Image (cartoon, rainbow, N blue to C red; front, side, top):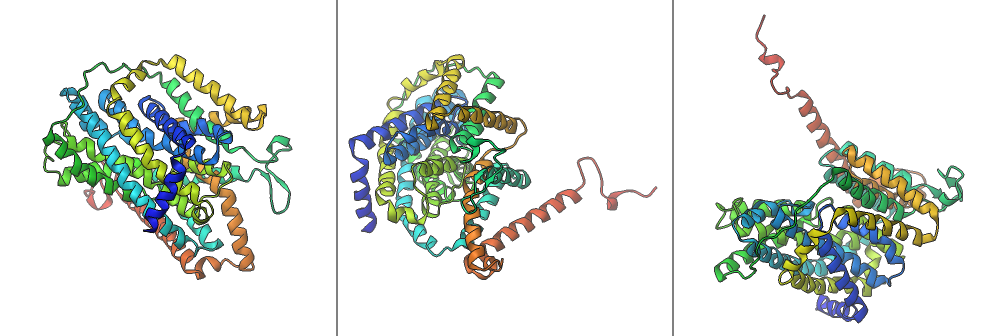
Length: 507
């Protein structure tokens, strides 16, 4: 009953005219971003972060969240119709595009839209029931426990977002931590790493890092690739038959459960959820022999998991204050810009924001169902926008947004530097997500570490005597041991075409 009461309280805030408008704007922009090749929620949220200064707190967070889960709806459209995927719609290309080749584009788009609605609805129930419980547990955490928890987040996100290269991920996270130390030390008042530049006294701007490493870097990469895409001109008939509809619902429910679970994992999210749901459909679907050749289940399951994971990924952020992926790191930046620290105190101190955001997700779900099912044929016209007109306009507004934060030209120069740095990372195959996580959590890690050392009088025993921190440190140690064992086995394994010592013939 408490959950229903809290949801009613949240709907009271979400159903105001202003918040409804911001929710509609976020869902519409998210759908558009999902359709456009080369863009995604990560770069878009980074580009729009400066707007949060001039928008009321509740409306800004609702709009940013709408952009994120709205993009998960829209990105399947380009994957199904033209085989142009984003990271979270790779699996949709398999059966979705195969259905397009068979003339079943409308059925595939309906399956994706309806399944996304089901997945989002299930995930909202999980979010509203699980997040408050995790927040109550997190009240047991002390400074040493928070330090260990942040280190676990560093390890998990660094490993998953870099394709398993833990060393690269941790190196990028360390760079982010060092960037977070630039500015004035709040304890001693000394300036650190400012190089006698007055504009660095307050540190590097969060907007500059986000815009440079994600927005400008992604745009530069797409311009460098010189991608040209052809608009989809096929026929779309959205109405499925009753037997086809009955095939959609079970797959969507299975995908919703898988996405809700995998969305909770550090480094998980929609990308991991879509592959998990697709694997389950190949195993348990009644029509599993058709999957891979244009089966409805192959589209419905991954779409539901994709949307469910996008919603439940908010749970670690809002309940314990740890973002699990790069998009959640940017969402955390939006919270911090508005003066709100995500974590266990957020639900108690800002119940209107938390429950209003949860309620707005269901409202956004209804908006997106309307935008992506009956109106999907009109959205396909956005493919006709030429890159030569699109990207210069984005860069122009990017500069305006950066300048508007502090009315300082130095911020534009810093953003340009981080844009060059982010593009360099992309060319080297390095992910900027661990860097962003380290930049945001670095000052918090330092603050909690100092508190832990103060309470333990300089002894590191606090990290192994407290049950929570000791458990987390043990998990980190086990993970590193597992990685070391895997590295040794890889090194001892003979390369292709070679033989080991024991296999060599005597001379």
